[in-house]
Structures are given as C-alpha cells and as structure tokens.
Image (tube, rainbow, N blue to C red; front, side):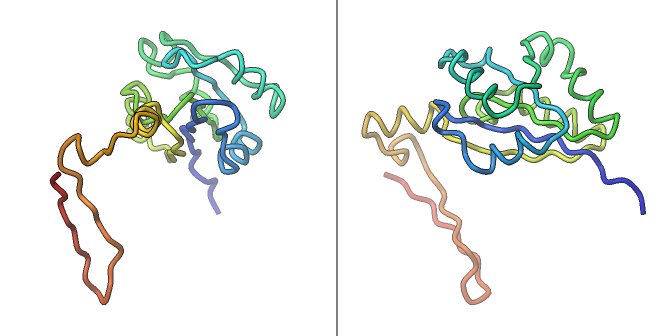
Length: 157
C-alpha cells in the first residue's frame, strides 16, 4: 500500500483567539508542521501567537514574501517531504487572495488541500452593524435535495 498524499490545511482562526474552533485545534495538534501568517490581519497578532504557543510551540511564522513572492515554497517543501502542514490565518482564510493562490499552487503540485473556515471581518462587520447580506445584492439559496429535487432560489431585496 502506498503512502497517502500529504494535505495542506488552510485554517481560519477567527477574529480572536477565543474563536478558534475545535476542528482547528485538532488540526493544529495533529499535523506535522504549522505555519502562522499574521500580515493579512491587523487583529492582535500577539494574542494569537501567545494562544498558539499554549497549543503548540513548534510553529513557524511566515511573511508576505514567503507566501506571495516565494509562492509558499517553505510550506511546499514540507508537503513534498510527505508531511501534512497547516497554514493558520487570522479570520477566514479564503477572504484573502494570497491564501487562495497557495491552495491553487498546492493542488497543482498534487497535494490535498482542505479549507477550515472561520469568522471573517466581512461577516462580523455586517453583524455588528445590523446589516443584512441580502441588501448587498442577489443571494442564492441552495437547499438540500428533497424528494430527489435540488432547488435554488435567488433572493432580491
């Protein structure tokens, strides 16, 4: 039996250390290598670093240059060596195009990629201001199949 394909987990940590989900904690504890990116958020990186140290002390901080200019090579090398890795991101990881690009690079190189979403600033701002996302433009609701039918409804407000 062959070795499993390594997985890159791109993990959203939420907007504060208290937002870290059980799923995110499990991944942080179980992967071979952990990378923390804090440059896409101004939201208290020191608090996240301290919280992460209490969970796992052997993590590597990555910079904008590491992810954007060097295409996440430091992470890709770990995956190439058969190791599972997690890239931790404050907020929701797919709000920033940087993380979407890293996911594409990893997939193109044949690695598995799993996104662990969390609360983003976009969701939080809407909620805190009492705004409805339906007011931002059309929203589509896709329901679970019922009696073999998958329906979709566009809401316009």
